[in-house]
Image 1: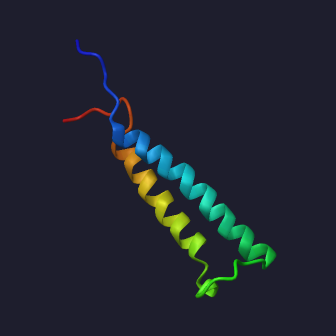
Image 2: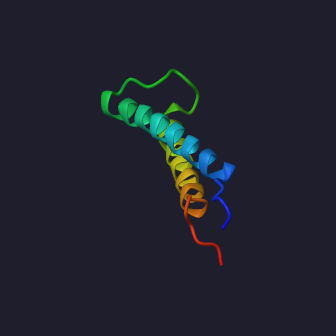
Length: 72
């Protein structure tokens, strides 16, 4: 038998999930408290959208390249 290998893409997915959770958490904090950064187009709430995007991409990589997945 061969030893199982871990794909680097799984770890990139974990990192994207962590960053996405932090960024979207900050965006939700901004929404709840009303203290937004003084930037152009701040009303679009970019941290919420980018956090969700990073979470989605990270979850895709974590599921697609999870350890122990049977490749056929």
